[in-house]
Image (tube, rainbow over all chains, first blue to last red; front, side, top):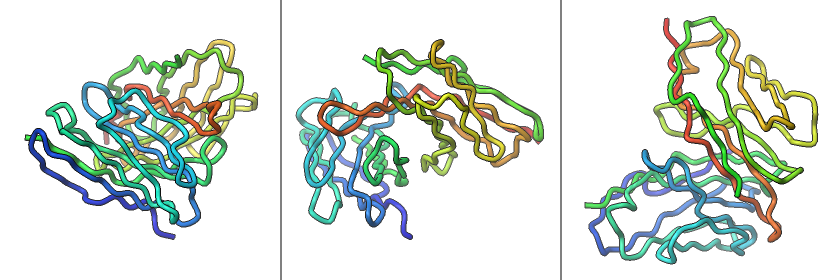
Amino acid sequence: KAGVTQTPRYLIKTRGQQVTLSCSPISGHRSVSWYQQTPGQGLQFLFEYFSETQRNKGNFPGRFSGRQFSNSRSEMNVSTLELGDSALYLCASSLDGGRYPQHFGDGTRLSIL
Amino acid sequence: AQTVTQSQPEMSVQEAETVTLSCTYDTSENNYYLFWYKQPPSRQMILVIRQEAYKQQNATENRFSVNFQKAAKSFSLKISDSQLGDTAMYFCAFMKLENTGGFKTIFGAGTRLFVKA
């Protein structure tokens, strides 16, 4: 069974640009969560999607958005990039969270110049 | 708001010995889940062990076990017979179900563990 796939693995952007990251969950998993990992702030929850609906959102500005498609694949978008958005973005999928464990992808390393 | 505290930024242990990583959390919830995740230099987060708050019995997974003290809000991880491959960043995490039906996971700052040969 294939694991969680995140693309691209690395991305370099400049301030003011926008970026879209992709996450393909494990087959059969309907819940997808996104996290931002930085040395200063650690791992922070961005949002969680289930059956194309955002169920929960962390404390991030509106520049961070996401969506989930009918095949459970999810995308995360960051607009008007800032230097502080440089981070490792991790995606995790689960059958439905809670009592089911989350499986993480390898992440997308985003660098803002 | 829930918080998760890992008070040991870095630890080291000799191969084959036992090490305990500490984690405390703060919540007013009664039903929740606790996890330990491992993140090796390859950066993929791997679930080590999981505990449901309503279960009094401590979870174990081979060489990994937890000491869950619900009243004290403590959730430590014990690694027995440490192996070189256990070298990684370890994160303690708290998850609760939200009113929306979804869930939110709060992670601690992590403990970097070095296993020495």
